[in-house]
Length: 405
Ligand SMILES: *Cc1c(COP(=O)(O)O)cnc(C)c1O
Image (tube, rainbow, N blue to C red):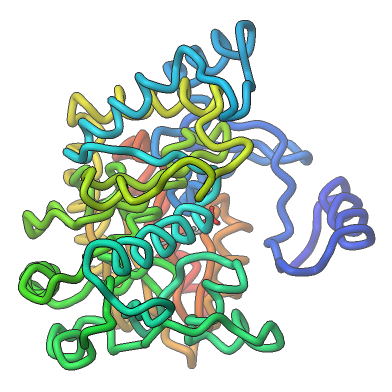
């Protein structure tokens, strides 16, 4: 890649003093609005990653910024030692959106997943009657639930877990997309099944139709909590509020993050009924920043935006356009297209290019995407993207592919 002058200098400076746990594309973003960003060399680029769904409502969404600004001027932090005047409203808003009794606010996605794991275990001992320290949780192959030591301990990605052991016991990995695998793996110690309704990091893998319904049925029959990690799939991305809605499935525990922070602050949460989340008593779990006033103000604005259904509709309609256009690239360097709503995993013929090379070719043409697992690129622009811009992005992909062929 040829680097523009300012970009080259910023990349060099970043690499010198930061840990190298990422390999970012050589672009240095300076400002953004809606679906478009501007870099330090003045290039305008169409953001087709949207912070892995953190920016569902677009960069600088006016309603979210207004809520954040109002809150910034008034009150930003109390810690959970005291209540504040946005806390109850946030919990009620998210409780209504999920249809659940209770909400536990945290900050990052991984913390929400950790919270769900803790709640499931405690529920298992106190409600289900699993013998102390025997609880097991079923997870799926190719899962991505975050980066803490407990979570990477049940990852099946060698890069994610290699060198970070010893790992916490109590997890069993089953094949993703197979309800039979879950049925067979459940035993008396199983307290929960933790799955992504669509596996994002794995390459936007959509399970077979009926999978979520069957998992729901099995969990209900066997007295096991169904915990849906909707951190990336939820809050409008797939054309519904939650990816589980596609099958009309309601999990026992929703795990949310990313877009819940409106692209402004990290906001995550789990939502569940009182019979589940009620197992936590004072002192048993917490977070200094979880449910802070700024996070709650932003979270309320996000839930508000979702209440009209406009963003879900946009994801559905623009998603249909995106998937039709991408399917049209089959045989032209594209070997498979997966996804739902405004979210696609596109497999590139490895003989043609790696996902990284396609991402770099798209960057040179003004489109930001991210590769995953070698030969896949992910496309998930902010839901505010215009149809015209979406076509423009796919045209750039077609161009990049045809230049390589
Ligand atoms: C991003 C993500 C996480 C982790 O969220 P962080 O905020 O990065 O900790 C967990 N699960 C899924 C499905 C995700 O996409």
